[in-house]
Length: 97
Image 1 (cartoon, one colour):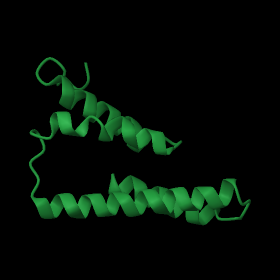
Image 2: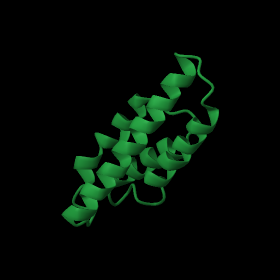
Image 3: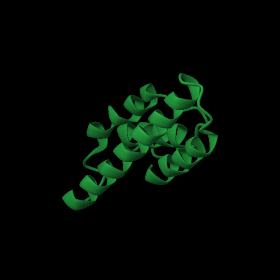
Image 4: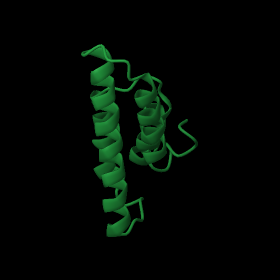
């Protein structure tokens, strides 16, 4: 049950499971980010980060989300041929996660 964490720490198990689903999913929407970001405060005591690491991680995540959504918008709504840009943004998003 969720990597064996659920019996001991349900909020953290839900966060890990949801985060892995979003990171590994081949379809990305802005809604998916709220799925795991809303669980983050429930398990924040389990994540041991310094404030510098948190800021760096949030900046990387923000840049990757904006670049992915921007390139996806250009592809889907504008009809521009930006497939390579979407691919690069997807790799960046995966790495940032």
